[in-house]
Amino acid sequence: MGNQLASSMDPVTVRRRIGMVFQKPNPFPTMSIFDNVAAGLRLNGTRDRKMLASKVEENLRKAWLWEEIGDRMHESGASISGGQQQRLCIARALAVEPEVILMDEPCSALDPIATAKIEELMAQLKNSYTVIVVTHNMQQAARISDFTGFMYLGRLIEFGETTEIFQNPHNELTERYISGKFG
Image (cartoon, rainbow, N blue to C red; front, top):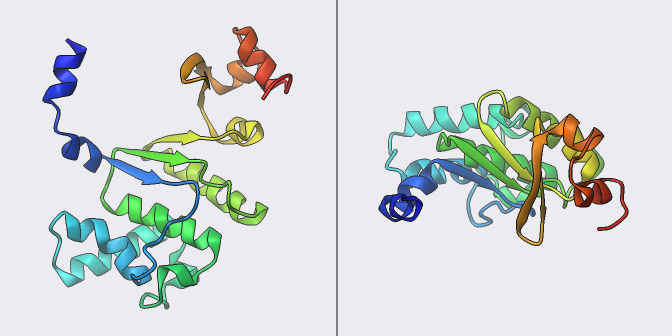
């Protein structure tokens, strides 16, 4: 039954419901800040200039970036700081109105100040989206997540509320990882 369901799903439809934010900020370097955020909207058929401008501003505001770079829309997405680039990538992901946002080590390439801004943003986003974050930073996982899954060698070892996983892990492997005895 599971394989039958999976084979009947259109991967493009599924992909349109998911926003991705990668480990290293990846703005489209040949595109302006505006065009970086508008790219997914245009791919999905939005052509109206007023609608695009409204959605770009809305999503830069959601990513707490509008006040910092709202007057630089025609500059390259690669011209802003690393933390701003990561928030630009978050705005780009949000613009297509995903149901789920996947973040793969979104702070690993950032300094502590930019990391704090991204963590604060993630805390805000989880009120409106399902946010899944991959991180090897145990302190970050404890700060930002409501639920934690510990994976080892591609297998889910333990899943539960973050406080339970960190304070009272049920699996010895989880306990050893959290306590720093391996990894």
